[in-house]
Amino acid sequence: MGRGKIAIRRIDNSTNRQVTFSKRRSGLLKKAKELSILCDAEVGVVIFSSTDKLYEFSNTSMKSVIDRYQKARDGDNQLITSPDKEVKFWQKEAAILRQQLLALQENHGQLMGKELYGLSAEDLQNLENQLEISLQGVRMKKDQILTDEIQQLHTKGNLLHQENIELYKKVNLIRQENMGMNKKVYGRDAIVGNRNTLIPYELSIMDDPRVPVHLQLCLPEQQSVKVPETGPGDICIGGIQLH
Figure 1 (cartoon, rainbow, N blue to C red):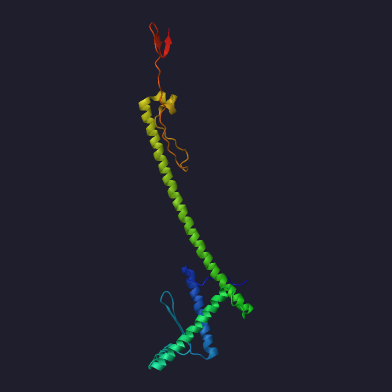
Figure 2: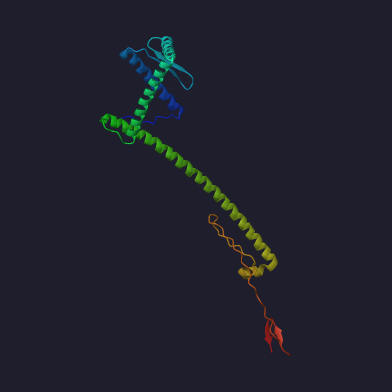
């Protein structure tokens, strides 16, 4: 079973990052040594770790490599001493940039599934692996964004639930105060006997605090008392006329 592909991005875990740095640093220095031996090239590699620790390799000496590099850079700068040489230099730079642009456009087309002619099975497999790594990174980023949004919605839902409970407690307290005031005004027996008729303002609430609370004001029913007419010699007791 082959090794799994990893996304080429910064490793968040410090331990894994240090292990990967150590392995890849050794591999890079090994490849530099092989290049110098196989191709008879003068090679110098300088590496600084995240902790500012220095690692270097040179098949001759690092000082000679740096001096040679500085002379080469100075030589390139000396080429720009006359207008003709300056024009040739920038024409050369433009040609290099044009080649790099064409290579990038070709690579972009291959990633989009175009311009695949001339590619071998190995090249297509490498292209597929590159697309899988990119797709894995996109999916990880999408999952992270969705997870953060879900967490925010959960937090907002909990806050709304707590506010709903507090409102329910306040409404329940108002109802109890209203009932106490009605007992003082109408009396205990009247409220117990006919609560819907004698309570002037009734608060209708739900028992479940998670359900939205609806408040409704009900006006008392008007009761009219008809006084019976009495004639001479009639007696009226409790609304009943006796002849």
